[in-house]
Amino acid sequence: MRYTQLGRTGLNVSRLTLGTMNFGPHTDEAASHTIMDAALGAGINFFDTANVYGQTAGKGRTEEIIGNWFAQGGGRREKVVLATKVYGNMTPDGEQPWPNHDRLSALNIRRAVEASLKRLRTDHIDLYQFHHIDRNTPFEEIWQAVDALVQQGKILYAGSSNFPGYKIAQANETARAHGRVGLVSEQCLYNLSERRAEMEVIPAAQEYGLGVIPWSPLHGGLLGGVLKKQATQGRRAGGGRAANALEKPEVRAQIQAYEDLLDKHGHAEPGEVALAWLLTRPGVTGPIVGPRTADQLASAVRAVDLELPEELLASLEEIFPGTGPSPEAFAW
Image 1 (cartoon, rainbow, N blue to C red):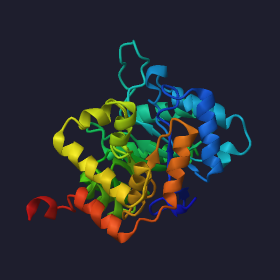
Image 2: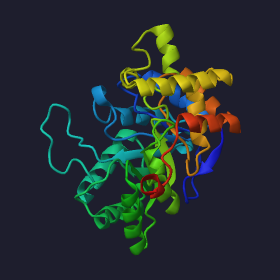
Image 3: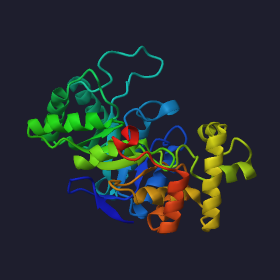
Image 4: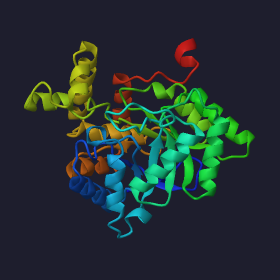
C-alpha cells in the first residue's frame, strides 16, 4: 500500500479509503469484519462511514458494526484513521422526524458526535465530516461547535462532503478569520465518467489545502466492466443504476469504447483502471472503495500499483473528456 498526507495536515492515510456503506444492508456483520481485517492486512488505514449508514438495517447500524470490530482489540482502533459524517436526520425509520436531529446546528453536531462515539465504541473520531451543506447554519456556529469538540478530544479534524467550491471557500475563510484550522478534506462525486468536480470543487480544495476523497469511483458500476457482465450474466447485471444509465445510447457507446480500449491494452478488470486513473489526478488523496466481498477489496488494492501508460491516459481523455476548470469551462 502507498500513503500520502491528507491535504495540508500531517496525517498519513492510505491511497485507498475503505467505504463501509454496504456494511449492514448488503454485507452482514461477520463478512464486514472479514473485509475490515483484510483491509488492514493490505495496509488500508483510512476507513470512512456516516451516522446515517445502515439503510434497511437501520440508521447507525454501519457504525455499530465498525464499533463491534474495534471492540475485538488487536490494535484495530489504533491502526485506523476513522472518518464519519453528520447531517442526515437520525430519527428512527417509521417515526416522525424531530427538530434538531439533523443538519449542522451546534446542538445537532454535539448530539450526533456523542451518538457516533457510542456506536463506534471509541473515544474520538479522527475526521468528522459535514455530509452536506447547511444553508441555514452560519459557519461561525459550526466552527464554534467543532472547536469545543476538538478541545474535548472527541474529534481531531473536520472535513466536508458534497460541498460546492464556493462553500469550501466560505467555510475556510470563516475559519481563518477566527484563527481556526478549517476544513482539511472534501468528499465529492468524481470519476472518469463524472468530472464536473474539476470545474470548481477540486481547484477550491487544492487552493485551501484540502485532500480530495472521491466517492463512487466506478460511477455506480458503469466503469467496472458492466457490458461484459451483461453479456455473461444478463441485461440487469452490474446493478440497477448502471443498467439504467446504459439505456441512453450515448452512454452505452462511451462505455463500449472504454471497455474495448482496455481490452486492447490487456486490462481484464476495468474497475482497477478507473481507480488507477483517479490516483493520477491532482489533489486526490484516495478514492473510496465500498467492497461487498473480500475479492472486490483485493481487486481495488491491485489498482494502487497499476501504472497507466501515457498512451492509455490520452485515450481515456478522448473517451471521457473533462470539463476543464472554470471559468474556461463555461466562459471561453
